[in-house]
Length: 416
Figure 1: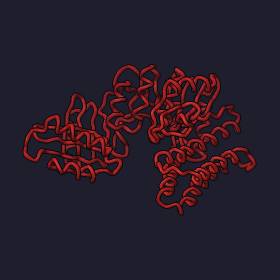
Figure 2 (figure 1 turned 90 degrees about the horizontal axis):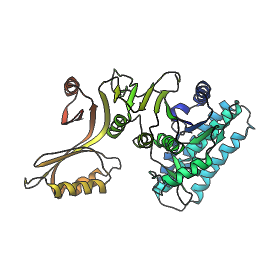
Figure 3 (figure 1 turned 45 degrees about the vertical axis):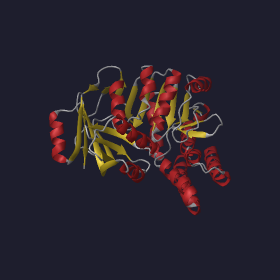
Figure 4 (figure 1 turned 120 degrees about the horizontal axis):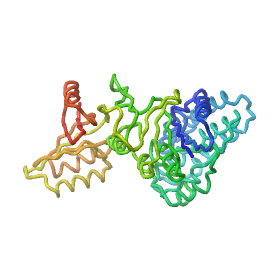
């Protein structure tokens, strides 16, 4: 069985959904499982509904109406016959959202988030499954929550691999075309869970692992994996091949084209992973598998913006030894700071962190009681894999470098 994944950009409107049908016709759809994300910016729109639920209930109906209207525009374009069953099926999901909002008593934000935001994927797959069926492509709609079983860590649930594999092998029908959702699963109590933002790639890898799939293809609005973000760099190269190891390294440093958790289950079973353009399905794109680290062998640039550089030193100029550093890491964990770079000397210790949960001020207040602190916010962390010396020289001319760290074939620069 092959696994395809179509992200939000590839199903953002009626024309894009028609293109999904074209891709399937060109690539073949026998013995295929298709994982689909929410349409366009639906996840963001449903996150707004969650925010209003907790902070401004009077705006919930307006926000939810925007989501409803967006999907009905797509339905009207794809299904001129208003009596088609898909209208009733989509209406049922919106009714479920409203019923949850009305009846829920839990104050747990992550739980509420998962119960509401998950409907983006459920609605998109219902529309796509019906559209394909309506146009002669027989398929079966599959509720991913019946297959992917997790713990109850809402918004970032961990997979129960043994139960998930058993469920997938029982539910998935070999030889057919199946349409299912990315991003979502369910816990032991049957409540919906999500796997973290961009978790649809991970969903594809989970199904591939459990089904011993032939390969996984992620369909994107880019020709494959590029050596740099074209929004940040004028000249980029298509990477035709990346090894599993190199792809995991790139994901670790923050390459956004690949979800960090996606590659590990695929590597375990040596399942090839393709990244291709849904606008040019015949093009080769990028292959991630065993073999050479990079083809072509070029420098790769990874940019992480809105970082914070924190530099600490002891108040009495004593050495920054293990107990000091251990205390710092406890606080970084407590205040949910994702550490992207570490550098220390005899009397100082620096970290570049992602202030994802807006806990910076609390962290700094706590650190100031024990350390002297300097910090720079709104900085950028630039990582260059397989760098050449001229790459560093060019970046040092372009930016003010606050910190530089070289390690093997990787250099990281904190710049402003």
